[in-house]
Length: 312
Picture: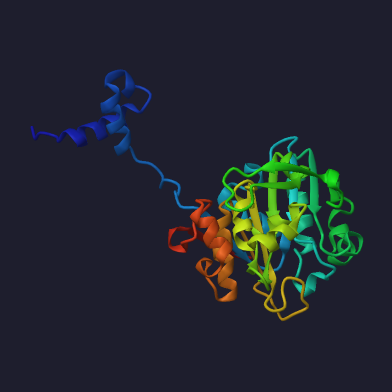
């Protein structure tokens, strides 16, 4: 009888007996070899995933863009306290592309409650007066009729000073208590140009959760953005690129384009690096993205990112 090679014998035995019985027959070392030859599905990508969906229906786009991560239920569990941080800093209408679209914020609120969230709070430290900013941006409408709360970070008591152990310039910062106490932190920026930092996307959006933004501008804006991003690590980043501001950012008004995209991920460097492409840039062209990459906060090289694209 023809002799069967040892590796093929192990594979045949594994298929015949199944993994329940094999550990009882073979020592651990041999069993691990058997498992390696068992047929299996393609292993999950070890590269960070950036999901991109193009379409018109914003809630459907949200649900679709989260599919590669297992849906919102993979982030939000029963009774979780969820904090959503949009960019709602300016007294600008959604069409002016200086702030996160309220339909996306509302869609995320609804998804979170559908997943069983106990509490959802939308927070922002606005640059313009918060009452007018929340009205004009549509944030009031985003929470209207839902159980979610809209919180203006306007008082010193809204913040708590924390240490930033890995900060190079920023060693301490007063950060929104809501964000610090959240079970799930969802960063929902809009992608747009910025006069001082070239672009403002995800990591730059963290400044709206900090009390003293002026310190950043006076002491090295881009490095401070990277510093704060070492402690503010969102569970999920969802970037509004349904329309983007191309000139006169961050407030505008300016030239607006409509990529009609929503971008999502868990790696804040990879997400920002991908979104930079909407402006004919790469992550390497934006200093704070480079600085965050140097600090090991994520992957800047899109060749090392698993980009999943879909259309609605």
